[in-house]
Amino acid sequence: MNLKLIYPRWEKLKGQTTFNLPPHGPVAFAAALPEYVNVSFTDENVEDIDFDADCELVAISMMLSTQVKRGWAIADEFRRRGKKALFGGIATMLHAEETLTHADSVFLGEAEGRMEQVLEDYRSGALKKVYSYMAQHPPIELVGPARRDLYRRELYNHKGVQMVDLFHASRGCRFSCYPCAVAYLGGRAFRPRPLDKVVEEMATIDNNRLFIVDNSLAQDKKWEAELFKELIPFKKKWISHTIEDDPKILDLAAQAGAWYVYQAVYDTSSYIKERVKRYHDHGIGVEGTILLGLDNQTEDDVKRLIDFLLEIDLDLAEFTVMTPFPHTKGYDDLLRQGRIFDFDWNHYNAGQVVFHPKHMTAERLQELYGYAWEAFYRHESQESRMFRLFCSVAIREMNEGTYRPRNRALANKSFGKEVARKSLEP
Image (cartoon, rainbow, N blue to C red; front, top):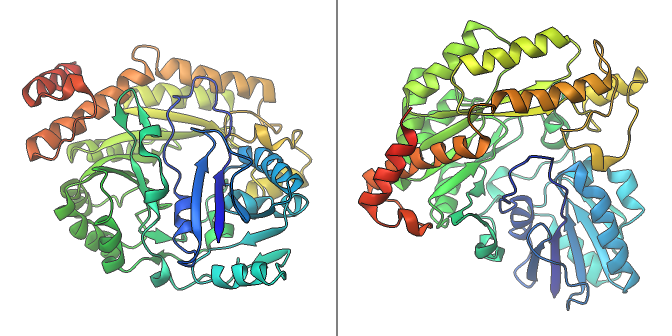
């Protein structure tokens, strides 16, 4: 059976760096398919879709709200040509009702252990309109190595640098942050993968650099410590979301190859300043993630926060505006209060204001969002800061003998070290 797996494109934000990471959701889904399925994969962000592809079923995997309208259009075209369209992924779960009008079938939930039945129904002409497993998570032990063989590797590099591979060691999140849909999508229970399964998948990944996409690694200190111990022998360098604020954990993370972390910066407290310093003391870079437009923020608060970011020695900063994604408390509150004025899902990209803020106009919040990016990167561009982070990890890899040059300018070890060290000079 031939199945065409598609990841729809989306429009990048103005000023956003134009690299593409290999998407994880589609290849995790592909790993859950029966062996008799022959899968071909197209990431429309890096290649065109062949609408005449030889396939029996089209599976459209959507992660972002900004992908859904394009995903619907892709399905409409394939269905016009007589193909069946199956939807899945995070954005499908967030926009299920609308997606149903463009789909032959919608799959809601995690795919492991479920696709055999779905495909059996398809082959017997009894494909259901909806397969809903949102409240029935499969045993986490069923999560196997993602089908990274489906990627066209040459398409995922930026200026000669191979992009990181994505990997996950757990699902679910015990936190329930105001603007986040993870509690709806993956449940409030933290579900760590067995460490032997983590090691098994890690051994299949050729890329020396990873993005561990777990919602937060700081959910179970004992598991987190054991995970980092298991990662140490692989000598990979990785990015992740928050790590436990504990010296022993941070030390293990550094030994395990922590490159830099995404750390929410939500106020101007000394705790945040010290938090960033503790990461740096362990050789771990920090990209601050800053959410603008919450109800407790005035215009002066936003300006003070931006000034504070310049004081705490962040390596990078990423600014977003509060976006009321469906099935979040933020969406429910703002919808009930009549404050959402834009329901065009293409605009739900965390960079466009779609609601009326409490302490300023929507237009002013949009201006402050632009000001935040401009102010933080005024003296050193985002690209320059990213290059410094890359050079810092390249030096570590060279010292360990694990560096794999993708750029000819850094191919010579001694020359590469000199370039990297000079780039890090103040």
